[in-house]
Amino acid sequence: MSYGVRNTLILLIVFALLGGGGFSYIYFIQKSEIDDLQAVHNEKREQYEEMRAVAEKFPVMQTAVERAEDFIGSFDKSLFPTNDPDRIYRFLSELNTDWPRVEFNFVFNDSTTLDQYGIVSSTLTGVGSYRSVYNFINRIENSGPVQKINELVLSPTNEAGEYGNASFSFVLDSYYDRSDSFETSEGDQQVSMQSPARFHNPFYPLIRSIEPNEENLTNVEDSRLIGVGNSRIFLKNQEGRLINLTLNDPVYLGRLQMIDAREGRAVFRLNKGGIIEEITMEVQQ
Picture (cartoon, rainbow, N blue to C red):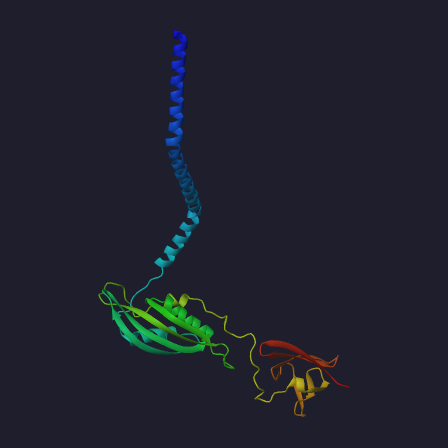
């Protein structure tokens, strides 16, 4: 074999060894490392996307935090100076400002002590118009003294003539200072009175039972229209008596709403337990 051929073969063998070694190193060693790096890259990419989404929301969140800090900063809270239940009861009575006032019972449960403060637990039960009850509870939680309402039960009375009322019961935890470490007050109502009044009663039934005709008002549906004038009408009621009514006069479940002398008819607006009906009566020839 010539010297040139031999060197060529040696070179080819060396290149083959180098190529095979490089391929083996990449395939058997670096491939797993590349896969691991790719997994790390994907994880970092997901974290980046999450952080970018948070960064985009940051100005809105910062504004919300600033508003909350302003609210908390202007919302001065304090503790009662002692654990006297009479003091707490007087303060609650001062919060009961709506008319008609809420009728409530105050029962002292117990008083527990911690290192720097204590908690007076009491139970309140009562009844009142839904608006008064709502405002009373709202003022307790938003007044100066730190108080917490637990186990609140609010329910409608569901009694004829009292559909707008609601009964309630809850346990009230009132915090007081034991070590002169906190700001105390007799009860600051400044914050509480900023709470808006509540008028909508979600417990008020849309359909209610029809109240009996205890005042013996004219039952339009059992009466007969006799005559119609410009300002009054004449009809025979359910007892056969002749009576006259003017505009807006009350009848059983409603009122006289309209008089039409030309057409000889009268229109009554009745409320049948929440169902509004208009009944038109015409003069019978």
